[in-house]
Image 1 (cartoon, rainbow, N blue to C red):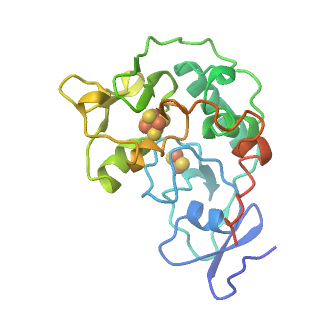
Image 2 (tube, rainbow, N blue to C red):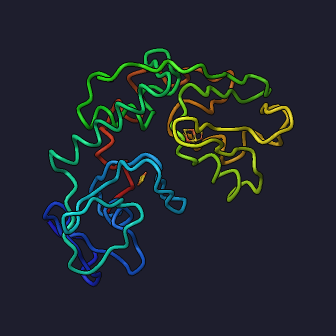
Length: 240
Ligand code: SF4
Ligand code: FES
């Protein structure tokens, strides 16, 4: 199998030839070629953040993040291996126990990147002991609900609010296990920010933290994005 762009430079991803344009990362080129590399904090509309580490691939014996790795002519990249997928599964299990994820009652179930990626990596149980952290729900805003229990700290809302909306509604505070998402207002609540439902930040969350109020389950379970296609398969219109 080869990429549709014969003039491009190429690297191999799990022995599949992938074309790329100069300046593209391995994850960008792979996504364009409809080759799946698991990822959580990367979004095609934003610069790479490099925080979730799920996109780790092996090049020359070293594990590096595909979302920040510049593609190089002739590079040999391994991604879909038992070793890397076992590491990804462990990272996903850690993410599940660090927050409070009750998928059957979550409005994002079936549209959730964390849930879909866990399925793709064959995760059937959290494996580790749950932390059950004490996290808030912020229902102060008239149109938007924040359920911090599900936050995976991908920082996409931080970037969308700053880069696209020209606001600074969100920030990540603390370090390590104490890291958490903060709302930038004097009261610390969303009602005291300028955020609106039209903001890019209101629709960017890959999990079920930032949700519009009064729109619960408008699309029934069973008819959502990942109910039809696993995350490893591109959406119609994506890919080569
Ligand atoms: Fe990411 Fe959503 Fe948490 Fe923002 S609220 S950091 S978009 S998981
Ligand atoms: Fe690369 Fe998160 S997608 S580190």
